[in-house]
Image (cartoon, rainbow, N blue to C red; front, side, top):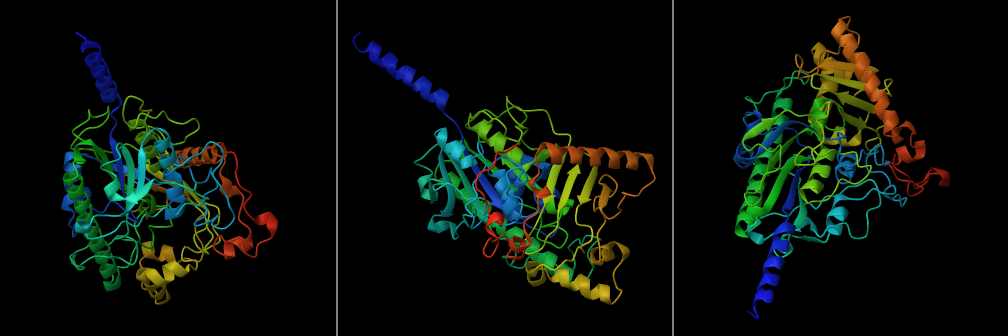
Length: 473
């Protein structure tokens, strides 16, 4: 009898512990990677690990980053906010001016930590993995002193629940991977010259995807070894689109559409909306994964967060539109804004006087097809679809029917068809409203000095330097 109260207390404590049990959440982030996996229909690539994850988990075909280049995109999905709203839209900006996030905006790792999660951006992996994570952050704002609790994989098993990221560089140029794909058999998009240089470059990209898949396999082995597989939500996705001429840094499908594969652990009941073994064509944005991951952790969506919960009891209505933006990248100044719905993509170009192949040192050095296009254009050896990339200016507006033109090579902005005109007017209006309602900071250009210095304020007048926090709207 005297032990009954003690036993009741133990039972109550066990009940509370069970109620408090929350899944670990692991983000596996590939750099500069489009949906070029076997499970997405790509040939000449060997990705059995990720294909298997998709077969047992859930694959999304319309998952979009908010920017087609790493630092603004990462600034967005690490906060759940559009980079254009929080002043993080110019590539690798605010590195020397002390600019901090607007009031009320925090990193997902901070929010997870505040809720009792251990956080990690894993760089150090066990020796048997045979590689290290890149621990990439690349945010366009001054981060907190302690953005993550650890960079070491071995800390995860003893610190649960955890939220962790592992970043993979294979598909970032220069590509890393053993030869596998046959250049003669790869499928070259029609807007690129069908040339041996193009085919070799594309094959090397697919080889990098194969190498990436092998490393994901090593992570899966570590999860099994450490007893973490049954209680860890696994999210694989790309930080921005493919590292090819019309992909990264541009607002076409190739620059914004990335893979998303979710694997829910067997140790937890699957949330509403999760369908194992299924593919979804729901329109999603990378900032939605932020809001949804918080929800999985039992954290209420923060007030003002622009990402939307797409899975679970708190799921919000499906998006009708997804948005993207590109601003200065390195020394190259463009301003593009885009919106797409289930069928059409609309692009508004605020710098139409500049050529697509405007000088960019990174592209000139790392993208062989970039230079090939210029060479073939000088020799008048490009098809009309390819010649668009070598034109001296760009269209102010672009409209593509993705249902009938998945490669976006037929610009319908001047089409006389009623349905095309209606789509142009509707999407143009939607984009204009989005720019205004989200307080797009790109409406205010950087100073010429800052742009010339690739985001650095060194040499810029004091009034042009960052001024710290701004209020997000």
